[in-house]
Length: 309
Image (cartoon, rainbow, N blue to C red):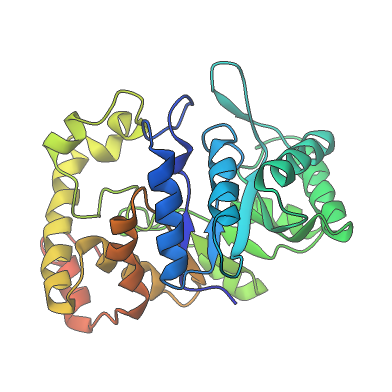
């Protein structure tokens, strides 16, 4: 059983790679992980690609310094990187086996609780080959469960013909709702857990974002180049944030916590991955699991620009 909110480590990978969030203080990362565990969060989602192995190493460091019960540790494979920090998809059996061994070493664990294909290859038989390797790793006890991330339903059908999918991981938020149409219902039909990522749209719905803040982001923060963080989309997103902020005042929480709570209300969603770079950010979002949005709240979200159906 996992808690409704899990700790996401994308941003704590730090700088130096294609989808970095800028530099990060490792001590703050460790403190944020510890605060999440103190708040009762019992799983951490990371990936080999985050900081080119650095996020996994920081998770291991945090857990080595944690005196309590070890949380579940989830990580991902099938994104390899070059000397310039640029990642590409690779699902050959040999590559996935090598990545698994590397992640086990960085995380300092005997088995990975949930091992996920980060991004699927789009064409050719490599998807089947890679998913077959995932099943072999599960039978060998190197991973406990095998999952997929960013797969569409056709790709999941191909994977399920080889072996079971324990969990799927799509992006899902008020501004990225595509998973509602098919991926989340697919998971419900086939008994696949769904742990969604970016419920605050990578900070866009946190309540802390503004045009000035976006302009001040470091040049190696991928969000500075993302369409959702620029005109013409940004203005509509920030109007939605104002409505989330008003709803949050009624519930005694932040706009970001309301955005997370909205994702958790979907019956197919098992849990939401929420990133944090400092302990106080954990405090702001950990309460999302206890928020019960009313019909009036949902009506307010859709006011003005039809954010909800």
